[in-house]
Image (cartoon, rainbow, N blue to C red; front, side, top):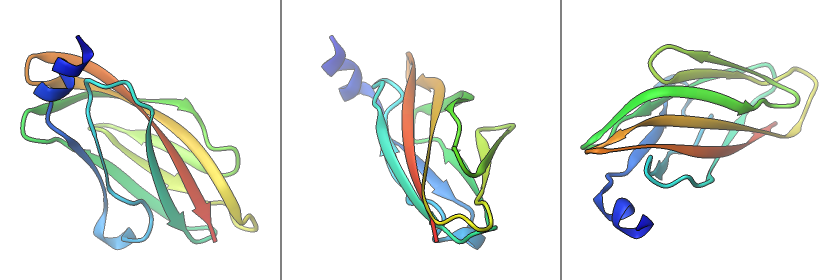
Length: 121
């Protein structure tokens, strides 16, 4: 029963490093619900932003996967559920990418897909 799993789960927060406050907007999602969850961000050409996942009350992250890379920019995954997105110089517009994050919420193991729409200015 999927609705019971969602009720038992705690929300997780995607956040951003303080130096890149306009890079990625915070979103809440559940590991026990596949999604896709939608995220978005704004970034200047040639800039890099570092995103990370902060666990909620009963959530623990296990692995972060890149399932659909950005078409124009570069995305690097790092240990501990962090990543860096670098916007290309000379490009302005939308640059979507998709991440899949897996872990455990309480006693339930699950994964969620998060689709980001990065806007390069």
